[in-house]
Image (cartoon, helix red, strand yellow):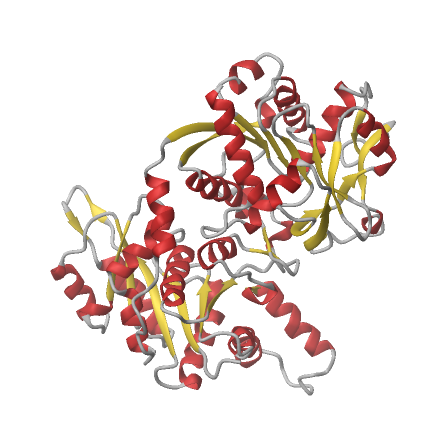
Length: 538
C-alpha cells in the first residue's frame, strides 16, 4: 500500500476537442516514467448513466474496461499510454452521480434533509474522485473533467474541485487548465484573449489554475507566455505550449520538452526522481515514423465517416504496424455503400479487410459482401464482434447453401438463425449496461492460427454483445472447413473462428482492440498486419 496520494485536475476552456485526454495521458505517462504509480479518471457532465446507449455519431466509440464498464473513449487513451487497465471507478457521469444521490435520498440516508447540488451532489463527486486515491494503489490520480469551463453541466464539478483544493491542503492538488491560443492569419499574430477569458471564468468559480497548457498551431513566443502569465496570475514557467503534433504519440515527448512534468512535481512538492525512462516509447515512435513498407487495410463499418467511432481499432492497427515497421493506411469503407457493382473496384485496392463491430441492420449486407470477397479472393480478413457474426452468415449462405441464413437481430423468422440472442439476454428489457460486458476467459485449441498468435491455451478478452453463434449449426460448419479455435470454457460460447483454406481468415466475438497498447500491441492485430504484408509481397 502506498502512503500518500496527490491529485491533478485537468479542465478545459474556450472550446471542446482541444485534447484534454491526450494531455492528461501524456502527463500521466511522464510521471509514470519517473517511477510514480498513476491512474487517470474521466468525469463526464452528461446525464446518461454511461455512454453505452449513445449512438456512435453522438459520442464516438464506447470503450469497455476489464470489469465490464462501458466508458468514455478517453479511457482507451489512458490504457494505451500507461499500459495499465482502468475500471468502473475511472469513468463517472453526471447521470451516475444523480442516480446515486437519488437512491440515497429514497433510502432515507440524508435524514430528511433537503437534497441540493451543494453539498449532496458535490459531496458525491468528491467521494468518486477520492475512491481511487484512497485505494492505496497510486501516488497520483489525474481527474479529467469533460466539457468546457462555463458550461452549465460542468459547474458542480468545478465547485467540487474548489472544495477539494481547500480540503486536501497545500501542495496536495493542482489544476491544469487546457486552453486555446488561436492564430489569426489576418492579423498575423497569436491572440491571448480567449485564454484570459477562460481563466477569468475559472476564477469566478473560485478556482485558480496552477498550470496553463496552451493549445496552439504556432510557436508560443516568450513575450506571449509572459503576457498570459501576467493576466492569469502565474509564473511564466507554468505556461506550457502544446503545439499541434504529427501524432498523439508525440505529445508525451513534447510535454517533456516543455517540462510539464517538472512544473507539476514542483507544485505537488514531489521529488523529481530519475529522468523519465521513455526508451520503449521512443523506439515505438521511431518505427512508426520510419516504416520500411506500406499496406492498405479496408475498414468496413457503418460509422466510418466519424473519426472516433473505431478509435481503438485504428490505434491497434497503428501499434501493430509500428511493431512490423509498416505504415498501415486505413481505407474507410462505408458498408452501406458496398454492392455488387462497386465491390471489385473498392476492395481490389486493399491488401487486408477488417469488418468492424456495430449494432442494427443498416449496412449489414455490405459487410457480408466484404467477407465473401475476402474469403473468395483469399485476402487477409479479421472480423470483430459483429464482423465475426457476418462471417458466419456469409459462410452459411454461400458455402453451406443456407440462403436465408441470418441473425435473429435482423430477421427473427430466419429458418437458419446461425447467430441468435444469448439465453442470458432473452429476459433483459433494459438496454443500458445489460450486455455481456468485460473480460471473459477463452480456451484456445492447439495447432490453430489463434494458438500460433497467442502462444497460450487460455486467454482473457473483453466483450460487448448480446448475440452469439448458434451452436446448433456448429457441426455443419466444421464439416465444411471452419475451425472454432476459441471457446468459452464455462458456457461453450464460440469466441474465435478460422477458415484455414485462407492464409489468414479470423473472426472473434470479443474486442481485441481494447487491449492493444503502445508497449503491448495485440497479437491478433500483429498477426493480421503481418499477413497483410505477406499478401502484399505476392
